[in-house]
Length: 203
Length: 204
Image (cartoon, rainbow over all chains, first blue to last red; front, side):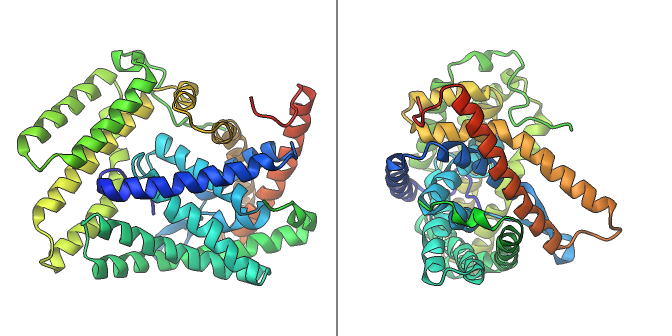
């Protein structure tokens, strides 16, 4: 869930911005070492793909709908550092064009959505690199993101930790499950139609 | 197919549109920090709120559009209100202050993005030392988003023609998988055309 501006206090937003800026700088340094020139258009069009995949909504019970975050899929396909850079730029564009999330709280949103799915989710996937573990890791990272949101709001002195945790986790269980199922289906489809796409070098 | 662009109102002519985007961005950030620092006082909020209203009036962005877009903050206000209701931990000024801060900030952000053309926004971001790779990715998203959403819409449309039920999650998931394959093929073609125009792997 994207935190808008005005919900985090100054110390929380400064700390989260510093952490995500340093993570981003490290990822870009790693990517700049890679000499394959084809990677830039691949990352660019994949970023547009993530943007589109986040707009397509999935009907769940009760007439509501959820949408993907796509961090685990893109880091499983292209690698964690590319995935993190792609997710961060998608979040920046969502903040400045669609107002999903604020500008001062951008660092917090990058931590909640991009860092959890691309780094922690990818680490879980690397333990046992199969499609099913990508599904599990996307479930875990979505819930972890929800936990981080409530922790950040708690540190800003806005909510009670217990109520925040319970409501955030309840709000995210459906979307985490959908994310896991859809991640599995997407990887299965790619394996079936064009399996050599799983061999893109992962950076 | 028809698309409504993100920066729909950025091409109208108004005094707010003419301000330098870097200045607008810095002003926005400083108002955000200021709202965090100052204590809760009615007078300052009336002042900042009226400044926001004046900017809204000058910018000629439709009010209905802004009001619709500000609705995204409501879930968070709801969570904070829930805390306020169930525990006596926080007093109600926290709720009011947070709500007002968030509302003013999101209105200003909408005004900032709707009064700045996207290429100018990118230019001002590069002036603020945002890394080149991020800028390249942002401009790629802005260019290829409309093409990819067209492909996604075509796939959803042709799946809907073939069934009378609602689409299953399995179908939509497989569609996104196919969309990634199309994305990869498109990125190859984009790379070839970039090579043709003298691209050597370095971002300038």
